[in-house]
Length: 271
Image 1: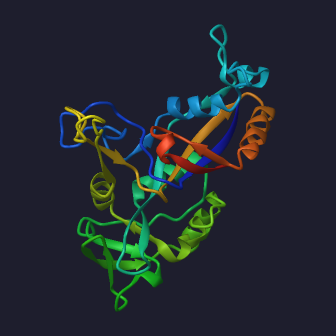
Image 2: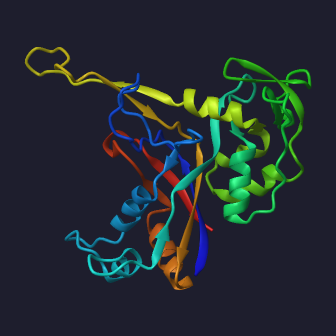
């Protein structure tokens, strides 16, 4: 079995919905049960990739049938969920910062096989941060959203340089000057509370007012978030078939809801 890494860097806000909610958010995003980190389910990604292999009559091409299967036969391409690696939050310096955490980095290290150094946090380090020097105030503070955090130390040598090649997107290339590693607790807090909440309604054409029951809010992962997934295939040629199709799309995919209003556009890279 052959393995490749696929990275997805959100160019616009992304909504892969979890269905209705009894909470304050009417249409929440899909999250992991135990960490509350946003994820892109493998079924969502598979559907988007499979649609690239439809002909003009919306029928599956032979290559599509090989990779993604038919009603009678499983496909040769195995697609797992895409996990969150880096999440953008507001920063008092640099405009915004990408945050990561030990759990996200260690998962990536395990899944992708990258030899990266992951900083450790002690029992009293929950509100401390390892950060790029350009994010520091007076050499000792980093301000993320409305929270001033004490600096535990510099980023491990080579960490940002190891990750910057995950996407060819011009914005992601700013990573070395905008990366911070926070504790798992802080990361969980930010990814739960710093997503976008968009308000929606539908106006009745006759009355000019909001239609009954048509006012709702929707949670979106912000643009500039980095996800990664692991793909498996029986043969390396399967990956080359997929790579060629992604190149035809200029390495750009739309994932999730609301494509007609610009949501879900991602820069993708098959490594």
